[in-house]
Length: 135
Image (cartoon, rainbow, N blue to C red; front, side, top):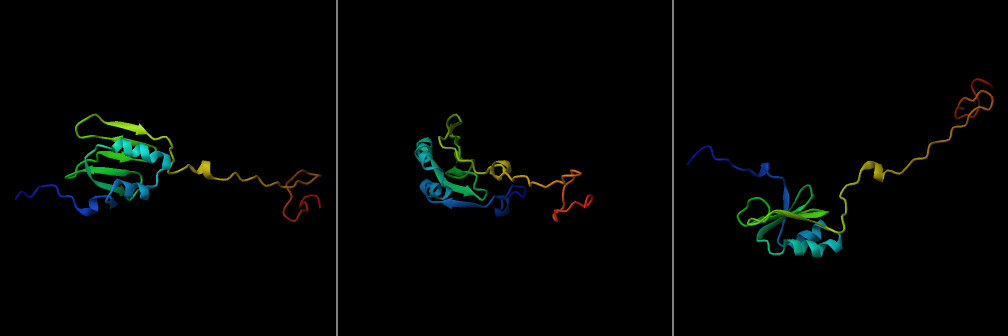
């Protein structure tokens, strides 16, 4: 037996959760309800054996029988299809639900504190309210 064969060990593969059906994976992935029918229509006819969601939860993958590269990736805003005997294509889903928003979009605007000023020298007053220079 040759000694230089590549071997994939379980530590090399990103942890993933396998599902018995695509519907079970969709229930766990929870895409917007209006996208489910389009997702099912897009992957209908693909001959896949394994359905999984990686630990990153970025997509659902449909693997062909015998392993190999996934036939389709279902993400929050699109379905990318890579059929074994055809051209690759993707379908944009109608209700795109971003999985992560930027901090600026989520952060609440904080109002700037109003700091009182001295009426005589126009410096900022300390929390005591008495001017250190005039009083």
